[in-house]
Length: 611
Image 1 (cartoon, one colour):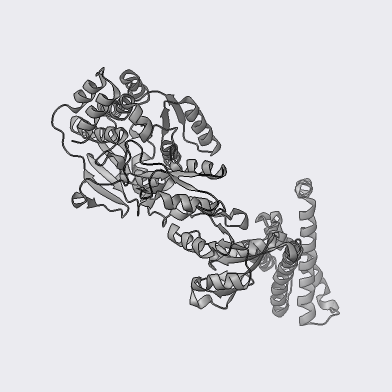
Image 2 (cartoon, rainbow, N blue to C red):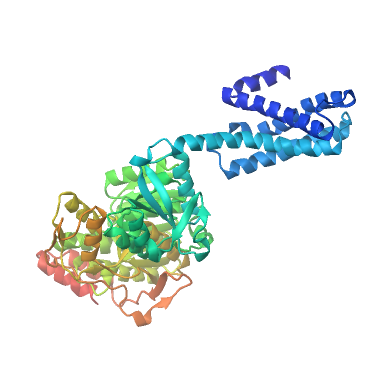
């Protein structure tokens, strides 16, 4: 036993050993205080041995519990309320252990007043010494940067996140000197939070910022939607204030809120909406424990589908793509994220019937998310045969194969460009929607579902990366038309709703996601230019190049809004895939067999896609 205690003592870090010894001395001092305040400073001989025995037993019991509950592993100069609460609990258990030992052994004769004083003093002593380390750390770090070099900063939002940010800036030292908070809650006005005053409300922001010559504004509201972030950005734009934002609640999934996570405002912050409510249990019933196949897995939508599916514990994840590099990158990304789901990469073409048959025979997927498609509108105008082969024939091939192999659920990603299509890409996706209805009628045991939405921010081919490259070069930023408008959604938000729609479908449905209000592309370009610290039309020009072949000035989400129903989810609408007359796949194959030029192919595709 003695050797084991020596080994434990040696394994403790030298700092922890010193803290333990200090606790023993402080607890022994608290015992003396208990006796001295009850009796006299010079303890009478009648109680001297009681004092000595208690000064040995009481500190031993308390420090034993402190050690068992991990208190000596805490770095107290950076401790928070949670650590002090943990210390209090450990102290209470240690004191209870001492009382139990003394009650059963009856070795000590302690005056009740002395015992009460000792218990109180012991907690005060060991808590106060740790608090002094915390205060010393705070004092040293907060003075590490001279005030003359620190930027005057306003924190917008005096809630929990704002208080965390303020304390973090004060604890760790920073080049930011916080002036105070801005918050709309009238009960907080004039109050002190985290050592800083609440200066006023949103309506007073400009005046307060100008009066205090603020250089930085921190938007510490993780639940703030895009409209609110835009409001703050617009209000402070003419004051030349550096505006930074706390990432959204989705990005703060680990719960850590600290000053280091504040970053410059990005376009996605201006478009983000309120966090989406999901029925996670319902999604789990579709995915958990199942073999799930994702086509187009290497793309921006497909890779996010894979990432979110992995969070619902599938039995196996099959990631299928045509480009080997994108699948390799996705596999590496999933591996680095630490997911435990078995992940199998597959390189294949969804329009290759024989390969699809082999995949379904070998891997037996139970759920399929079909995101593979050609999506670039101008490129597909120049390559209509390939657009039809992949988007339409590829969808039918994998859907028909899935149905014949008894897949439970098949979910296809569609696009708003399929509504009254003006492009080859849109027409082929509309044909794919209709082919999915054919698959449902042919394979009634499986559930075939389509989910339609507009552009997603950050996807391949998105206009945003192009604008950013043009801004980096100094312009001009090219926009096709001043009235061009598009629906935009963040990729994680869109994929979350895809999974929710997939869990709701009974078969034959076309779900349409609520995309919010359409965004004017020229205004988006202006926002991006300002976010990069430039003034539109002054520092960087915006040049209008004209509408490209296949493009519309605005997109639609429904053919007939009057025949669209709401669902149990307020962000998902329901339409029904219309019944098909005739053999649609034969018509698709006939068009692919044409040996005419691209103009004739486009005309045939439009004829079929606009029915």
